[in-house]
Length: 294
Image (cartoon, rainbow, N blue to C red; front, side):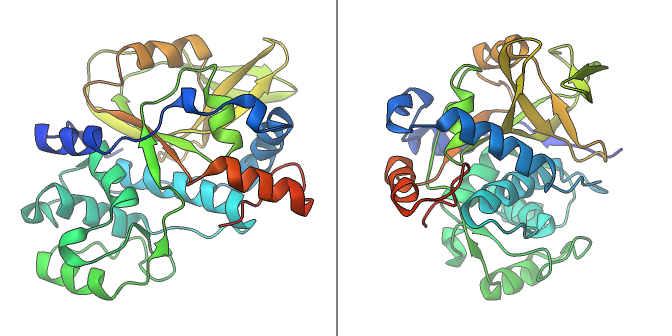
């Protein structure tokens, strides 16, 4: 299975760090009444809606980026529309260095965050991703000039995120997921897994936190699952190797947080003004998991 996540350059990392504007502690549970029920309902809805992808290039980061955006847009609109992984891959190559376009050499976590929060300013392209239908998987551009031409005319679905910050610890993540946020991160790809049954469902469970190996990006923290047997929330991750959701125990998640997700990087991404959107939804009488008013 091909996969390659790059360590960001100092310039990329500084660009992301300088533009961070939120952290998990900024979300106050009392401002989001009923958030625990919403987090559980979000998880149930997303587990039934998210597609399992099988990458065929070194585009793990773009696959993760697209899956995260699909999940957030689903919570915003109630519609599951696939985002373009191939555009995301080419665009992140361009953001890291235009000369990388078409090299299939992998991309960085930081380039993905910049794409979703700032777009491609040099080309006048807004933050976000086109749909899979308009920029299909497999139409990877090997030519920089051809990518630029297509990107300038692409119809971009406006990014669901406006702010980013450090990945929250496992105890703060459930509220992030409840308000439509998620995390974008990469790790050394040599963990071990085992299968366990919780709540009558068989889960693939992450059991180690490697410190060496190649890099890999996954859709981290797009939802949390309440594990009654453990009386705790567990982060749920989506992989692009055809194997779908993976649970990671909270204590292992926090190991990565203590490492600050180095060396590949990790960020929380949030919609704009979540408190206002939550209140709008409460007033308009929405269901358990809000379709936030954009």
